[in-house]
Image (cartoon, rainbow, N blue to C red; front, side):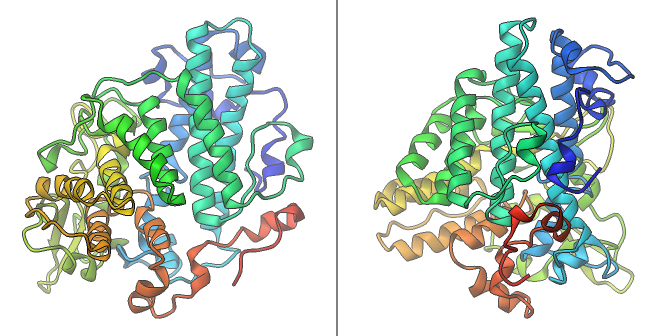
Length: 465
């Protein structure tokens, strides 16, 4: 794969063969997929082939990039970059580079994360354009795929701007447009994301049954809109979108912490389907320690020590392994399945309802509706076996409690901690004590040096790099 947006756009009329031959597509479409290259015109004359193309997008999202729990995904390195995971591998491994803050604009993982994500966006755009230009697809399939495409495009761009700052917002497969595309500010990217999500909402189904939420729905779109409102500190919008989902009786927090990451969890809003019918989410294979000491990553000791006494998340979601010298290492144990099982038990949860309670709690607190904010925090705390917070109107006490709940609830889930440190302006307060080499400019990753050379309109490089 060429390493520039320009190079990603030169696939002519052939529609992403890699998407069409993925092994897992039949689980989405229940149809055999062609093994040869197919023109866009052929693909988008047939409902099943069109769905197969989008199935390939989902397969890619699960395998690599921001939404992947696989070893090649961003979930692990973002947790190592912040203060959740400690790296134990060679200094040249991805986790160690991010843990040690030795990354540079030439770091392969940074280039790969950028190019993989824009490749995924290109493929999404190819589906959107193919659907829009088709007069053969059923209206049901056209609406569904267009809605999913706009939703996914918004979410990937949101991750890009949270990680890299100003970035291009790519909405076309047009070579001439994309070969010299420039960056938009983060606020402009947010605006484009909102447009895409608002386009998606009327096209997506309202909801899907628990266990089958492998496609985005209106509730998933509202969840991403709520997250964006949280990032922008737009508390009225945050309340609006959180309430849409929390009010739906189908989206309820699981009372049992051990059921939160099962495929049929009622609190899951959107999750990615594993590779095959006997496979589970990658996270179990990536995080569970079968031997000690670790060969790649484990949870930081200071993270373990920060759990409140009696927090059942510590026992339910954290495993431990002791080595021959009686030293204990801890690992994320949200996902219990190491690899395969007779049937899939765990899907990779991208969005879940607990995040919305935490966002809504902050919105209420910022609007000085303290009782309501405390109630939402206590919903999370009580499920974890912790006592309710006492009533108070001290906003600092409540925000600090909320920060701790987000840390204990959302750890090692797709960069939440890194983005939270920035949201609360705590990165330069907390990280220097955790990593002495921390510098303020580390709040953003550098743009890949190779991309700047190929497209000068992506300049300037992020500060510090």
